[in-house]
Image 1 (cartoon, rainbow, N blue to C red):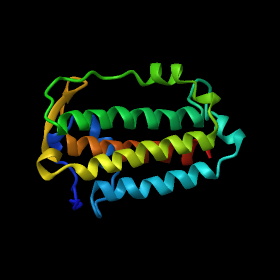
Image 2 (cartoon, rainbow, N blue to C red; image 1 turned 45 degrees about the horizontal axis):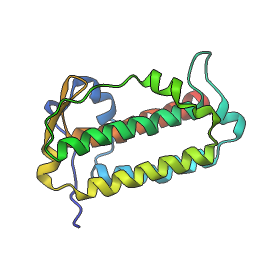
Image 3 (cartoon, rainbow, N blue to C red; image 1 turned 45 degrees about the vertical axis):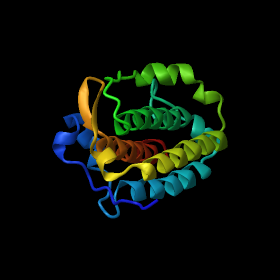
Image 4 (cartoon, helix red, strand yellow; image 1 turned 135 degrees about the horizontal axis):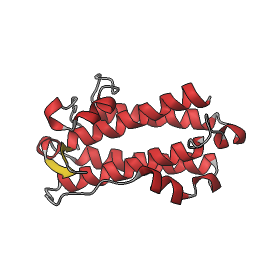
Length: 175
């Protein structure tokens, strides 16, 4: 399987609020390379957390570190499902999801950091395998998710940028 270098999507490939995430992803090597590099970086960050840090919140009512990591995992699953659906040509509009409801019902606080790290690794590796299967045509396919049109390429950049966004929050507000 040859690996395509998937460059950043054009602004017309995603809703404007996605720019927050797309703009964070470095341009060298494309999104698949960025996703692969992030895996090692996130695992290193998680591996250095104490139990006290993992349960900490930077303010009352905010997610704990564990909940934030769980949110990153859940969001990656949702975005990857959207990418899979659209890459395969399914034109069924897909719903949004309520990140707070997901976090409230996930019970991430009962998980250990090593378990969350392993889950993140499995989800990310599965998505890397998925994305490496896509040909150039699949990367450009579009669908509607959360009432907005978006390409497969933009969804992959959304996954990468979303992880970078939350890793920055981990470093600046929690650690």
